[in-house]
Length: 118
Image (cartoon, rainbow, N blue to C red; front, top):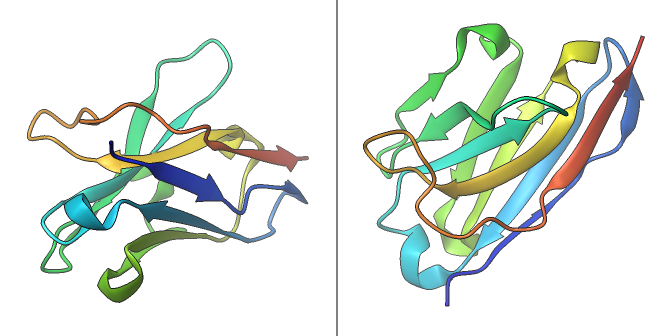
């Protein structure tokens, strides 16, 4: 069974920073493009950043220049450094293996709540 455990969410003021972490099952991590998704209340879950096994990164336009995704293969962990946070970044953040369609492949973890106050 694949496990995805997210952490690092918090309540921060606009302009602040957070670093999210996601530990994934070792069995899938080393061969996977990993991504961070988020879901705001009343909205669909969206993929905000992804990183390939070779370290190629892609971001949704709304977070470019502010968020940085990285991975530590030895720890089976993917990170999301979030700077210059905005109230519209408020959401539950999840990680998953990214399929070609952009959808997450496995069942979702519990996520981690990020709340940005204005």
